[in-house]
Image (tube, rainbow, N blue to C red; front, side, top):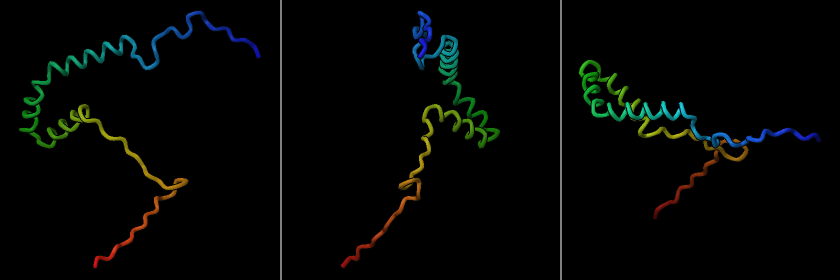
Length: 94
C-alpha cells in the first residue's frame, strides 16, 4: 500500500455544515428584510384580499410554511415491507 501525500493544512477549513461567508451574509440580509417588512405584511395581505381572497389565502399559506414547517411524510410497513396486518376483535358487552 502506498502512502498518500496529505497537505499540511488538510482539515483546517470551515467546519462541516457551517455556511460560508456569502451564504451567511445573504441569509442575514433576507432576515433583516423580512423583519423590517413584517408590520406591512398584514396591510399588503388585506390589499390583495380585497381583489382576490383566494390569492391572499395562497400568499398567507406560503408565508406560514416558514413559521410552521411541514411534517415529513412517513410510511408504516410490516415485516419485510409488507402491509401492516391488523386484527380486530369485538368484545361482547353483557
